Length: 570
Image (tube, rainbow, N blue to C red; front, side, top):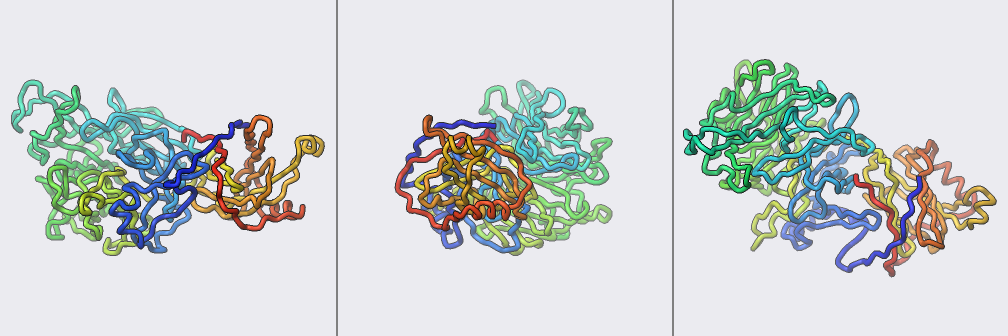
């Protein structure tokens, strides 16, 4: 495989810092949060076209560090450095980004038929609180696997796409239907509602396995969203969103747990009849609350999922909505006794900054037992101790108090949910390279297993190469991967070609590439050699044997000329 790319000039602006600068620390909190470092601080790279958010690490604990688990966000909004599905490592460095899906929700890694996939929703989210689009799955090589939508004539809604242990998909659906709304102040003529549905479907065949509709089982009187707040702003999309389904989960009995934001309740649905077996919270609560009303007092909540062998649920309790932003939001873990019908809060996570989050949000329980909260409309995510009382690691990806006089001003960047999950990515795309002022910059979008670069150079002429059959390689440097982009000094030597090798944590080869300059055309020819099975030590010894070893020093940067290899759409 050969890629021919013309050299280009890169004008380096004084206000932009390139290469991996690392995250901001607790010492930078005041400046970062007030927007004095930029309302949405960004990190720019020389070898990678897209910028990424430069995170603030408010609080850090070694218990959060992981070589196998990553943060999953889907940034969007008016001011983010990038928009689309994004993976970040546990130290806050960019790992993977795709600019091909600018409006993305619910991005995460899920298991399907024993393999891990990246999944998300993408489409039009300007519909007054729900979406019309598609569900996407890509494999560990970042190659498209499947795009699908719900069964029938429906479009895919943004709120939920969960793959079950049965290798089926749980998806949310919003259906605009004419309805007599006189009982809530509407009319019998020209009235519409947005009804909430969910489906369980076979991912491979799109066969419908189960479908449930809110109007068959709930009443308008259960709703806390007033009729007067119906959506009338989008022609052809007018309608009252009375139920607002925003999460679906399934238990070992085959029954479903759903969250209805506008009824302030979770509902447990029979998988055969669709009947509501019980409700937690809302006007028809079924449980005795052992926690002074907190367990059943959720309002405008999101993301309810089963935990602890289906004996507890976690839920992000917003406690706020567009027209009422007075109460702080919180993450709850609630133990349910379905025989005694009692509910008890066993963990509650409240952010030290007392975020009021009126839109979006998520809460999950990690394999360690720690709790992980994404703050949706507020640009932050936090890992808590299992009881929710201790903040272990606290991250922010935009300023939150950049309003007048330091006023709370979320929403600059949003991510519908945030996750921390295991993932291993093996991109088929080549690393991207830029060479500037005697420094070699390299990044490999999505390579989670890569730990070290080995760079070799050659000044073998074309005639000598043709005669010898190969380049004579000299070791330039062996350098641990440093964040997303690594820089390697060329020690003042002018090489006509480079050989670049990526190695994993065991110093086994992941791939080797040749980057050769063409003096006539002013371009680079990049050859993907192979997926290697060798060791770093062997290659280093091979190069050192030829009597050259580059000191690990970097010359000062003065000029602005660089070369950049192309980007993949993923």
